[in-house]
Length: 178
Image (cartoon, rainbow, N blue to C red; front, side):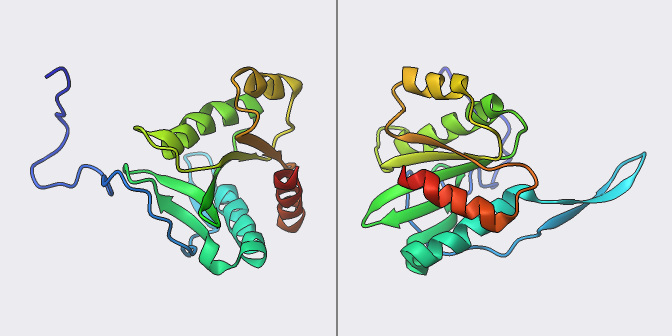
């Protein structure tokens, strides 16, 4: 064999869920909204922006789609979790939230994840793939996604840093309806 897995100790589970099956699971897990960071030079509390955005989107979407149709951290079936999933009559929309300060880096991080969630190894389970970022959507980002023929399935949603979560949710809702 060309591939040998050498890191696993006997009896340890390699991946959390490696069934290969995506199973929609509605709901949200409670999570920490702030973390305490202890660095050599300073102690500080930081907001968990990713989780705040995730919770805000979830709360907005349960009003629109109902609690039974919105899920957070759904298993992909391959040991990874999808940030947010909306089930609209068995048409799934996958959301990947990125908080990097560069739209290019957000795309670089989110796109392969979304493609894996939706299409690996030989499946097609999401009708839309959405990257959520607080960054301005540049012409370069739009052109890149259009060149790669993702324009019909991958949508970039942008808020702005420091924006209140209610405003961010409205932008997300408006962006999806475009």
